[in-house]
Image (cartoon, rainbow, N blue to C red; front, side, top):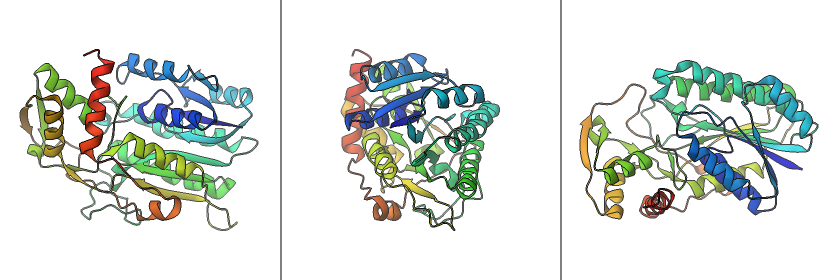
Length: 326
């Protein structure tokens, strides 16, 4: 039996693939290696995975129905799917909205159809986002909160994915779980995320922009904790009682919201160099604070984040130096 990981050359997808391989799983990685950010970083993640005999790679777009049908025929042994491929980024959705409809809606639907036609599907785990909480003022964010007020197209597509997945679980009794990730960072992280942007700018002596004049709080979650959450969830598919849809949604966060300015201070201390700060107003589609209520995640599959930013950020910067040959 094999696990299909979509977005396997991405940040979270590559780490999840490594974790699955480390425990003896066979992994099929799918990625279209698009140029949303530096393709060489994606290729380096993929090449690290290809060192494993139990890993195979498919260079394909998940929204391509013909390619996904061919994949199903080629790999009938797939019984679990970790669907992490998506067009990421809140701000980029203002510039290129059609990329989000293609990947996050059409692509998600094609993956669901792929799962529906497998000989046996034990569990589909897919990436949602903390962005679905939109303009909620209540913190921490709970999965019991309303999520019908998205303030970015990215958030709207992720909430739509949850609805469509629930529908498929109901109609076809497909065990599926959506994971709302909260601001993930760590080694091999994305260049469009805060840890990478700030670290690169400080090393290069360029200013960094802090939106809302730096008055922002985020539930920064280290990649190892994210991976533990994904694997723990994958191992415990929702039961099918024949009545309610075998579909669940959970928060995966650090359970601790941090000031953005403290995040910057730890990077400064680790690098040994002060940042040049430029203050800027709040960006459209952004929120002031995110914070995850993970009580149901802890209850149902023992998820416990263990990495504060004081530990995680130095690990990221160590990787950054090594990757860039510094």
